[in-house]
Every structure is written in structure tokens, then in C-alpha cells.
Image (cartoon, rainbow, N blue to C red; front, side, top):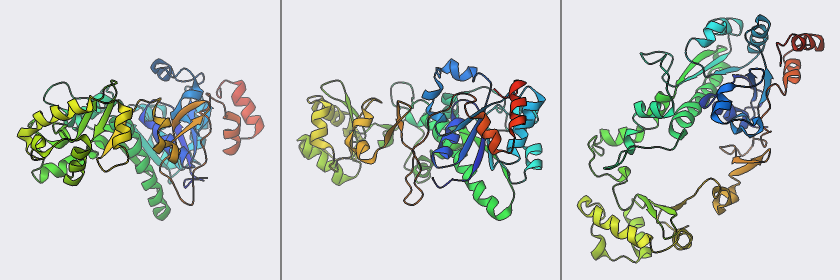
Amino acid sequence: MGPLKGIRVVEFAGVGPAPYCGMLLADLGADVTIIERPGGDPASRALGFTEPRANVLNRGKRSLALDLKQPAGLAVARRLLAQADALIEGYRPGVMERLGLGPEPCLAANPRLIYGRMTGWGQTGPLAQAAGHDLNFVALSGALGLSRRAEGAPTVPATVVGDMGGGGLFLAFGLVCALLEARHSGLGQVIDAAVVDGSASLTSLIWALKASGGWSNAPAPHVFRYDSPFYDCFACADGKWISLGPIEPPFYQLLLEKLELTSAVTGKQFDASNWPALKATIARRIAERSQAEWCRRLEGSDVCFAPVLDLDELPQHPQHQARQSFIEVAGHTQPAPAPRFSRTAAAPPSAPPRPGEHGTAILLDYGYDEAEIAALTASGVVG
């Protein structure tokens, strides 16, 4: 089930954006095979992924434990890639080439292969070989700088804007685009997806504002800098938070009515000189009631409101429950596949695999017979 049913993807195990890309494709029906090290990935364990069944990014995939240090292991990988529609790898530039699995030999063996590469800085440029993490990529993309306030360090949600949004999501988009193009040309190609490139693309709205004179690099008061009293988060009486975003004047006026604030106190909405005093007034009013009380008073209206919820609270919210936005897989709560399709709906994802769990089934699907599989297993090539 799902719109990508019939697409075969081979993913080389890693951490972060590349596995997220594979998850997105698997969620929508692609047959994604992870090639893992026998015994699992040390980097994943170091980050805290100690239980394979809990690794959400691997849901819906199948696992083949393969020793790529042995020539026979490389031969198995090449045989799979010769039949696959797409490849996903997230190593530092040059690693796949040193394994003999770079784009040139893989495309020579399978001209229709879409070769997806996921890095932080990209395959080229002076930083291509430098180490880095989500925070660094988001900083160089410009997205981190957009979160600066008058006081305090810039901050963004961990991994969301960079690794997942600017990285894995853009690689998945690139792979699907290339798969569509290959239907007409019959030719594969290489997708060079960099977290820093995708994260920069996510800032396009701010670049549009800058081009029209609506954004300054200087820390001048601006709605999207969270300087205004009508686009920010406010603490409630119980220590929890709510978000308010009524930028449009009718929505802003409605907020004032529901907060029981008079126009004499509020002044003109877009008079930035009045923002600090008005923000303090709104903050005091919000602090008078609990988050639950503000939900009862504001939620569902046009004041542009939402409570700030933690991960445990999210699945219980009525909006998420109505849309079944969170599901349980192998006993672990997680976001449901997105987006939704009217005709080719995705099936519920299967549990994340243990390393090598589907080795025999995968090799049979790719044309190996039982005698070959037994030999590969006996030699330790297949875990």
C-alpha cells in the first residue's frame, strides 16, 4: 500500500537525516532495505539507540546485516544495487568510493539507479570533509541567525530545522523527483543533498521579506523576531506556556477582547515603540490563569492560539486524536506517516527491525537461492 509501492530502495545504515529519508519513503510504501553492520551501528548506540525496536527512523524497513569489509559482502551489496531503484547513503564524501560503491560503478551496473547522498555540507566546497552537526549546519544556512532576540543566544529545536527538515526531507523530495524523471529518460542520476542547502531553502520566506524591505539584518523590532506582543509565547499561572500569533488586525482585536484589554492600553498594533509595554501587559494577563483555562477561553477561536505541549501531552490533544496524528508501533508512540493520500493510503508501518532480521527474505527477493544464502551466512558475510 502507499503511493511508492513497488519502489525498491537500498539504504546504508547511519544516524539522522539519511535514515529519516528512508523512513519517509517506507512510510509511503517503498520497500526499503537497510544494509547494517553485523551487530548494529556503534554510532547509533552511542546516541542512545540501544533498542532497535524503538528506533522510529527505521520503522517499515527491512534489515540485512552485511559485512562490507569482505569482498563477498561487497558483491552482495552490488547485486542488490543492480536491481534497486534508489540508494540512500549518509557518509562523509569519499567513503562510498573507497568501498567501491560510489556512483560511477553503481550507475554503470544499473543506469536507472537514483543515487541519493546525504551530508551536512555537501559533496563539494571547502567544508565538504569537515565534521559537523545539526547546530552547525543550521547556523551556516542562516536559519539559526533568524532566531536571535535582543537578549540571549539563538536557538532552534534540535534536529528539526537541520537534519530532518533541511536534510532528510529534501533528500526524499530529490529522490522522488529523480524517480519521476527516470520514467521518461530511463536514466538515473546522483542527488547531492546537503543539510545546509536545504535549511537555507527553508528560510526563503525571510529572504522574500528582505527583498521587499520587510526584514533587516540589524536587530530591529520585527514580528518574526518575537519582539511583538502578538507573536510569541507566554507563561501561564501553572508554569506552562501558550503561543499567540494574531498578526492580522481582526485576529489581534479578537485577542484583546478575549483578554479583556482596552484599546487605551493597547495602542496601535504595529507601533513598535509601544510593544515592550504592551507585551508586559499581555504577559501579566496570561500569568493570571493556567494553561488549561486559556485553552478553554482561546482554543478554536481566531486569536491564533495553541498551547505549548511536551511530547507526552501531544498525543492526547483533541486535534491530534481526531486526525490520528500519533500512532503506536511496537509499543512506542510516534508521529504517524504524513501526508495523507485519498486513494493510495499508506499502511500502518511495521516495527523497526533488529539488525539482520530480514536477511534471508531480502536475499530471496533479490534472486539468491537457499544454498547461496547458507554459504553467505556460514562465512559470516551475512549476519
